[in-house]
Image (cartoon, rainbow, N blue to C red; front, side, top):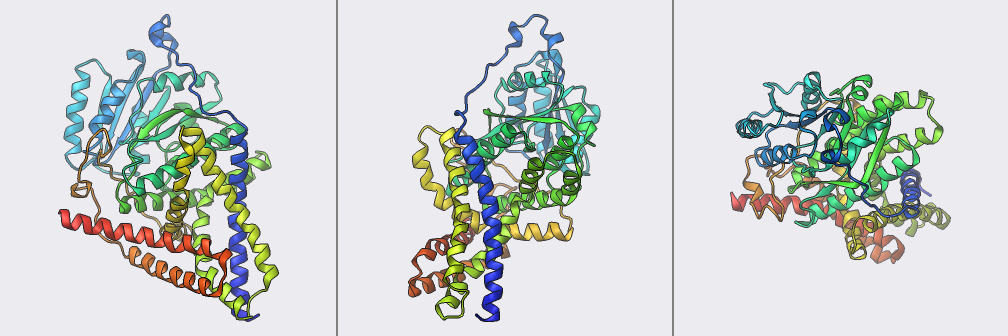
Length: 500
């Protein structure tokens, strides 16, 4: 075996071990979900039928952080103004950092609801210090609520949201109640289907199992209700990571607060329509999670929590590590088999052992399966999306690997919000690329991804020539994934140029 082949074999084996570990974690979660019943809504208390409702119900402050969201700000304000809750116990804060027409739209809508007796305030900052975390912390100083609900601009909470979450705070140890995200526009495109597929697994499997097992789970940045004392005791909102929600979640749970996840309570939201926005969102989540891992893994392992919580917390915070590993495996997969065919490889025993790494992919598949089964009546046909979801996820490996590297290097970056356009079946069709928020440029990353797609396609041709049939599906996913992401970026760029 040549020295280069030995290096490739060692790196490839390390990568497969990492994928196996994270896959087995998902396999465990899938087994837990399989043993539990499907999601069912719980009873909803009604304040109108309760004696002295103003004394029984805690004061709630609803915070709506906005930054240049002209397409969706008004519908969010309307939805929150219609929340069913004793009027004297509810206030709404519109935390507006906008620099465009959003501010005027918000001011008009706030005034409309104020005239109808809703306690709603418009808090406009002229700077974005601390970004979303800064806006939330600024609003918290002025909030009178014992409980704090947070909704991002594209979310539409149902009128009974507070009635179904507030009751969980009768337990004084509960610091957060998190709802499950739904999707307003899941079937608009391949991109939205892919996102919905992944998010469904996060909520219906990962969040639910962490809650059932007593492990740390996270506030998802929106569609949650906090206890104000929990936020304050944990140190408040901070902006030293790009995922202020994940950061605060772990700080609070390290201090002993308990979180509740409600899989049966869905809050629908709009998924990003354009690939550049999706790239930005995924970059922020990957980098922010790794920043949080750097910040809090030490305190987590020094804490008195059981080993299982520390292990699951570590896998949770570092989950995006799979993306640079996928990139590494994609680069090495075909060359390593080429070495083997030339008599310079590590031998058949090595590849037989590496085949065990595919057990990890059973975990990824079963987690998706049980998520779809739990959420959709016609779930078997939805599993047809699984290969495309896997390919699309692999195609994001370069984008998210860049985020991981920046986080490990300690390189700071601004919080870039994901633009939303109020495009979904109920709102009708709209050329989102004509919006002033749309980023229609073609990033340099798309060309690198196209080069990776061609590289993986060449590897696929090599494997076909060698007759390495068992290795071909894996290689096909790599080629399809990088090619798909690059193609979508180029297609959306051309569409925007033609429609401009």
